[in-house]
Image 1 (cartoon, one colour):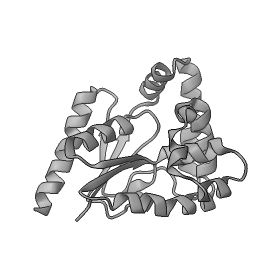
Image 2 (cartoon, one colour; image 1 turned 30 degrees about the vertical axis):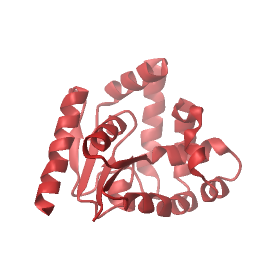
Image 3 (cartoon, helix red, strand yellow; image 1 turned 45 degrees about the vertical axis):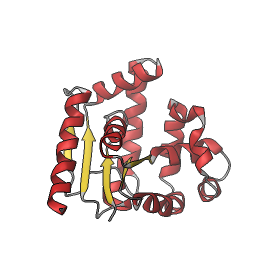
Image 4 (cartoon, helix red, strand yellow; image 1 turned 120 degrees about the horizontal axis):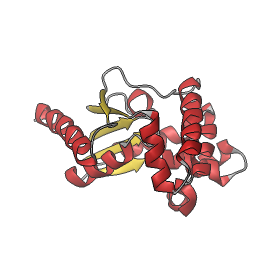
Length: 197
């Protein structure tokens, strides 16, 4: 029986880092669902048609980690028909054996509401901006403004707004090292796995 881990939260809070570490630790498949929306946004043209024709090769574009791609993702993610076109892809991925980890903004609330582990990863705005600026070699003040704009759009959208699932464990990484954040997430997964056996 497959085991799904849903990790949600705003950009640069650490959810991708935690997801990759958990995937390596437990031997689970990992999908950064934000790449789906980034790929759709960067394809250009009609976003719904882009989502419906999305292929796995589209997720390997080198520009998908850019700030431009992040903004494009946030815009197309607000379109209900784009989200609908990508739901099946994500849910199918989540059923992989022995398990799958999906990180995004609506995994625990919409895509995999029955996931046995749901994490909501957060950090304060300044910390997130500093992390993303270091990653991109960009100006922290500019990144902070972009993150706040994106957060506001993601929380306000009608289709699957950014919010924690009611049963998600909130993990604030503001003052945690990567090792500490991963250890806290690992403990949550191990507790859930133990309760299933």
